[in-house]
Length: 422
Length: 184
Image (cartoon, rainbow over all chains, first blue to last red; front, top):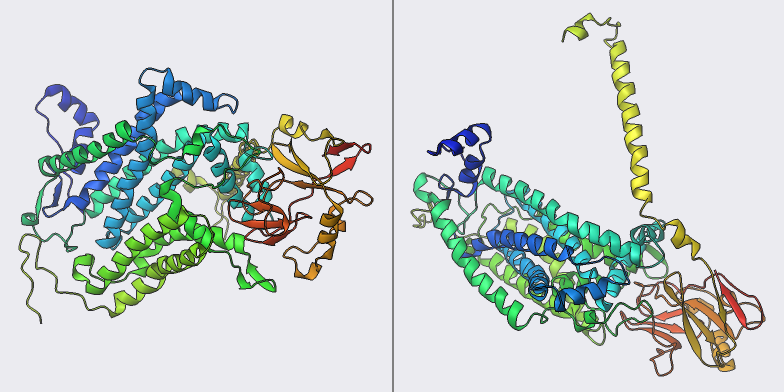
């Protein structure tokens, strides 16, 4: 664990506050000059702070949008259109919020896959990793409920399909779905509670982010070599070195973000969501937002029961699909115990590298499959891609961590000369 | 603590104060759980939602071979005036081959076989199947086709192909007169 250094501000007022509430010390020890950080962090390490910035942008833009939005089925759609047309800069703030969700997910996905490649889930960072998974699950719930609020066709039917997933639970499924809806279909009570929760959950996320940073402080940042810090020569202060590097990365990231907001604000959305919700007409195809597509593809790929179809079904097809979808993310929680290789960084794992690259490709394929109509060969491809996804975590990683011959690790971060082979 | 020292100890080390602690803890726990229920139950359908339980529909305008959609409890209901061929088609199927085994008789009212009344909600994930309006795709079995995940229903609203596990649900309904249908 990194040691704690108390800040001693020269300013008397700050000093007076600091004695009573050491908030400067807190900042100083987490992202300040007294935060020793591995000197070799590459640009993949930028995405944590980017995700944090996106959370701040989402909260600020969202609080403002809530001042103009009405969560009632009769007027929700119109109130969003009013934001777009009449509220001063409403179009800008709404496009920031809608595209902000996508960019939040982009940052978080890169952050997660950075962790998967560089073994960020391994000791001593297991809890840090698991808190990250919790943040991701909360983000998914928040994004899903946010997408319902404009009350367009995709809002309504997305909400209908996703809430109906819970009807797969044996015995109590129907009651749970009615409890979620507050009625017999997705309707006004549903919209109201989703708005309430959509406002609440980002602050819960912010709370878990604080725990996430706390856990990071305890275990220190990992690094691309995946070896432990040996001496202070391996480290540089977080400020100014990484604050500047993070700021530069943020500049590049926001440049792309702004391109979407100003030049293609609807590129990541679905045009059907500009049609007001109609409970009597299902759109020709219901497609979730892009960041849910891989899991949606997994859900649809499972169209067979556990057991012998029609004779003895331990778990029916619908429930099995839902379980597989949730399991596809929950399996991340078990990663520290599935991948037992002592070598953290994928750079020194010649076989792992390839399987990991396939996993990345597999995620893109699943994303593409999730957006296709389930016809022709699409369901078959879905089964293959789903099989590889689970095989990577449940079979490949456990076997690989026992069988793989890893490359020799460098002596230290500051002296990256390879140890002679023994 | 001094209070503990002053407490009379029984032979087995259990004090009267322990009993008070356990009792108070249990009561607080029961109270906490009991007060949790209103916060869960408030999410269930409210009284006004439950009150919108039934509707009456004039079915005299539905020609043989056509169907309408009405909204009941926020969900679509299909009312289909079936042709003689559609009825015999529905009866011709071997029940043992069905995914959700039901005869056509079990799904309509005796003497009113031409009227099929089913919830317009796919039993997979709740989309509205196509096939009620003229020109819409009716699927491989002449009934309904769900565009979301490709479930096919027959002329009795029974699931024949695709991921849906059950037949289209038949709501509670009654014929008040020959031309008036009450759902709910």
